[in-house]
Image (tube, one colour):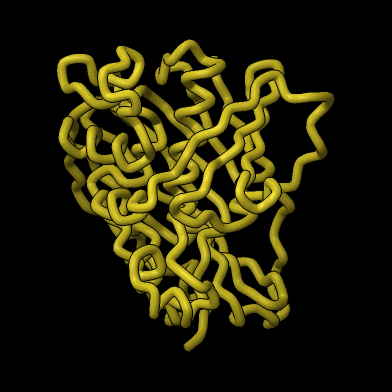
Length: 285
């Protein structure tokens, strides 16, 4: 198994139609912990079709369109062991608010391949547009352990300096024991998040939560806490996955207000605030 960077970068984009409706949005929101308490008016904005609005991180699962993290690993020039794959980071640029239902064209390609020495990093870019124009652009940064060392470009550093002062807000969000099983129904079927035997082969003592589930939970906390619950204010959302989360743990999410953006850090309360999300920004209007 190997990665041929030149072939992967030269490969033709994959384009396909994606569709979604309110049921997909509601399932995603439930998968990231929305709906608790079930009758809270603020939560009904995520769960009740007559009041529904769409958290922009839904873009990571909308329509399960190309390339997706799993299908992207079958692009030309890429032949890797799924057990060596970790989602290293995610970025979304929101061009317009994501509609509750839609049909759009998703175009996916490998935008970059970086050599980190002990691992390779694939940047999978997905651009989505409907009849009215661009909707969002997403970049997934995928670490493939054991596939670096060919002398390629190491790529840019996404590390940010430490936030200034104490956080403006800190919230905690419990994670259900079955959270990964619910979240995977939105389309990420990697057995790492459900199969104990597969998780052990990948080096974990039990299945871990999807990084994109943590990503969605954290954005929801920022929107609900500092953006007045208004999902349309989000312009971009960028993070580095700094560590794993296990279902049943509790997230502690710290937020710092900056001009036009919120700096965020998330850690696992149960493991002495072990870092989970780092170098995280929510850009907003």
